[in-house]
Image (cartoon, rainbow, N blue to C red; front, top):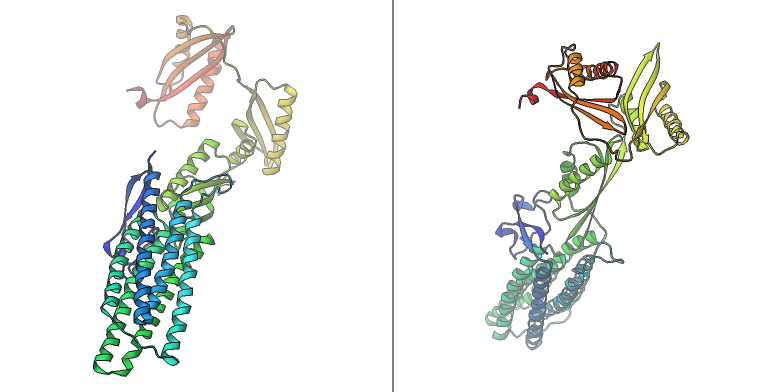
Length: 515
């Protein structure tokens, strides 16, 4: 099975490893512009869930192996040189190793499908993993700052820069660059917050490692040229590393806490309101709620529809709103709840039909007469033909009572009960009756609005005679006049041929009949 995912094509600056260049992989082109990369384009990409899991696990596993090697080398060189900068980097890398292991296991769990106990899936595991990494980074900062202040003011430690120290730090920067690019690519591809956190860690490691190398160089220069104050370059470099870590921790903390507390991404709600507001038939958008679990967004939208809208039309509008939400949050899980609302310009006919629709009744031929300031309503109501007269009358009584309550200006209501067919009637084949057809066409000629009559058909069902025909009218003839002519024709047909049980006239516009 193939699943479609929209991936954001970002400019190179948005995928870089430098500080301030990393762009949130879940940032959407229309909803969340990212600095200079606000004009990101979307392109649909097909991938299978199996390949997604394999790629995420592979890059997370490679990150763990690289973290182990780098951490061990930094510890060895840090102890042999006595450099606080290198030791702080070793501590940083050690916590990165823990974070990488957590990430490795979190991506394995987060890709599991939803089950009875986790209806929204397991995506929050990635958000929780990123939250733990934030805490580990803050612990790193506490130790580095404490040790740097101790060496600056209370305890002088002689640093012995060596070629091995420089080689290890440079190798660390190369490996961190490779890890950051690999993790960042998969994080963007599958919108993984856990992999994003790892990529962000290792991109900052490049800069912090560079600062440590600079500190070692300054210490070495101080030894060569006998400049005493340069001996403090190493703990100062360590403090700079701590500052970088604090910065990274703050960025991660804001993202992960927002995800864990179901905070809506900035700007997305307004974009959804704008997109959904263009859907035809909406009276209002009551509520929009957005939450995120892993790389999946969930949106709950409550919309107001005219209260006489049919169930089918309500479903069509809900589908259109869902499509509008997904134009902002691709592949989101969307739930649309429709609420009936009175339209701003409801007339008395709409209000009567709204009460009937509330009970799933079909009323038609509603007419309202103003009799000396008193409104009188007449309506036709279709009910299941299998109902008894008593049950049908009870339905009508309740309906009329509710109509009076909702439309108090109505003085009286008269309801014509019609039986709604519930069975298929067996009848004879369609027959031709030349004499009857001639008689009907003669009657039609008395009505100048009728331009043509054709397709006259006669059916006999259960001993009753049914007649139907097509009548052509002028295109611009008002529908009310068309209905009056149809009614008069039906009456005249039955007067001329009393054997007729039912007459059905289908009106057609003149242009349509010319085809």
